[in-house]
Image 1 (tube, rainbow, N blue to C red):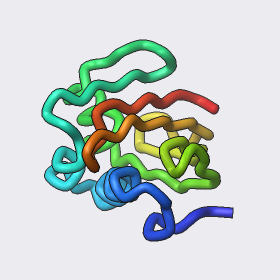
Image 2 (cartoon, rainbow, N blue to C red):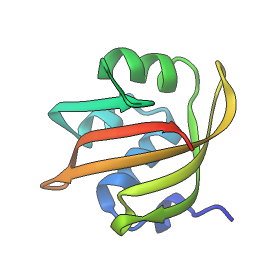
Image 3 (spheres, rainbow, N blue to C red):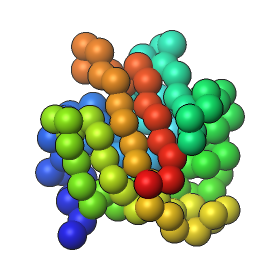
Image 4 (cartoon, rainbow, N blue to C red):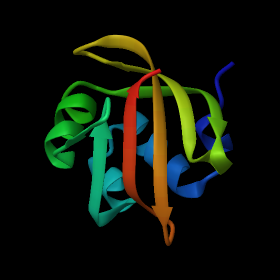
Length: 107
């Protein structure tokens, strides 16, 4: 069963998912710390390049199925124009209300 974005527990994660689903790059960047980092399938990636390719230019969308760790760990069905839909895991490090790191990969 999908968890509505507005019902996600952590405000920063809620803003992250909302920005992804709205394809709102400005709101997405606003929820990240200036030095935020990320990893995909265990490998660090260039955040700007990855988010442009995997989220914004390919119409990324998250349907959250489960949250844990106070809302900072998600299981979601992620879809984009490049890869279709896949079950993914997401984990977030939140500092002072902003995301300083996120990691994703197939679940």
